[in-house]
Amino acid sequence: MEIRYTKDTYRVLIQLINYIEEKNTEGAGLRWLGRYESWLLKKVD
Image (cartoon, rainbow, N blue to C red; front, side):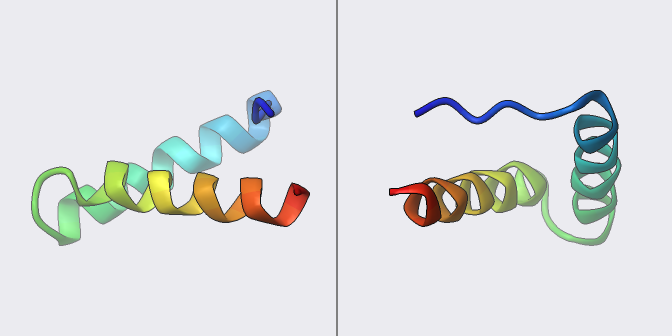
């Protein structure tokens, strides 16, 4: 299944990823997003 984000949700996620990148090592924000999307997909099944 594909995850579709609204414009507002996408904007907030980008801000959150950028914040995580600032506070952690490079790539941490994208790793977090990957885990979050995996969690969402498990909840749908």
